[in-house]
Image (cartoon, rainbow, N blue to C red; front, side):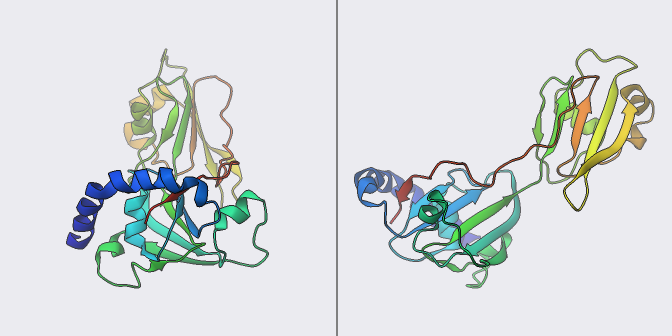
Length: 236
C-alpha cells in the first residue's frame, strides 16, 4: 500500500506537465502505441504509451478507481499496436483474446504477477459492481451501486422513498437468470413490506425494481464501449 500511495503523490505533482504534453503531442499520436482503460476509473479512455507500464501506474494515470469498482481487473491482451484503432474501424480480432483476471488488492502486494507490465494494445477493464435499477414512483429513479446489496425496502429508501405512497402501491422485482433473460421474481404491495420488513428480500446486482403502477422499466442494453473512437492521451 505504501508503494502505491507514494507513487500516486509523486504523479499528482507531475500531472500539470503531462497534460500539457498531451495537448502538444495529440496530433502526432494517432498511430502511436496505446492501451485502452475502461470501467470503474475516473478518466477512462485511450492512453498513448512510450514504455511498458505497471498496472498500478495505468490505474493512477486513469484517475484512480471509482466507488463502483468491484475489486476485479480484467487484462485483455489483443496483440495489436493500438487496439482502439482497430476497434474504431470495426476490425475486431478474428481470434480469441487472452484475458487475465487480477485483484485490485493485489496491486499493493509487490508481486509482479499481481501488478504486471501493460503492453501496447492491451485493454484494462476495471470491473464495475452490477447495479440495481429502481424506477417508477420514487423520488430519484436511478442505478444503485452497493458492495452489500440492499434489501428491497433499503433500496427504495436509497432512491429517496415512494412518491404518493398508498396502501395499494405495487412493487415488482425483475431478476435475470443465468442466460441473461429477465422474469418476474416478486410482486407485492408496499404496505405488506411495511408491516413485515423482515420479509423484504435482499436484492441482487442487475435486479430491476418497478415501484407503482407505471410503465415497466425494461432491462437496459448497455454497450461495453461508446460508438465513437476514444481520443488518445499521451502519458509518458
